[in-house]
Image (cartoon, rainbow, N blue to C red; front, side, top):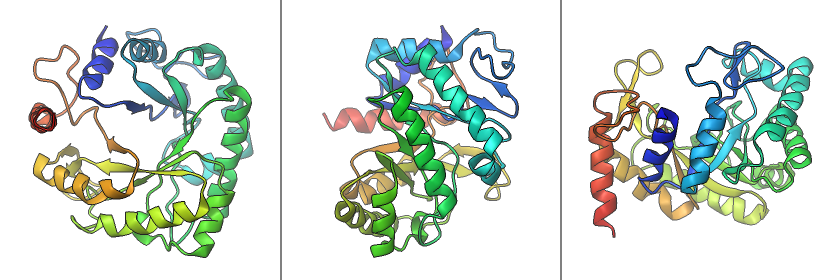
Length: 284
């Protein structure tokens, strides 16, 4: 019931898409699987619960196809052949169990490799192999990656060629304001260059993965807390001219409807929720 409540709460904000970060991690799954043991949840099948709730309210889910190991070992997860074999079996299993849901919109490949000037060969191989399986098990799926390193991308002809080679429907670039790699008001410059590169390649669509957090203390060494809405609004204004949609990292923990029976996260999350809803309602 709490998972149902949380998905419907998010739908009530007007958000159309949800991204599931992981279906497994560190040797255990978040759903009943024949491949690994399941984490001990009160809910017997959280994945069924959230997709069923999303069916009811029209949310579209990008369902993760990882992490079949330690999520922090990115290179291993992307290149290890035994993990690749396990991931393929998992995608078949997940598709068989859950792809009948109308909310199962597509797949999210969550292993992130930084883009330093351009994609590396390992990333292209990983993404294209995931897409090969995705097309096989869910032919109508729309598939997503959300890489970091946005500031460093050199959106030249080499990058355009890589976009042409990359078999992915949507790239949601991280704006990196929360991790302080990009200064507020500058991200639009990078997205504009990427927008032009995507238009030239004529393949994947460009979205944003916008960071709505700040760190409680040192960057990467402390907890995430909700950012102020004025900062977030400036982020939206900066990048929205160049992207089709804006995803956020992340709703869980950083936004909560006041009085929610499925409260999860920081105490200030109700203020961010309220500030956002007040702004949204004022646009109508």
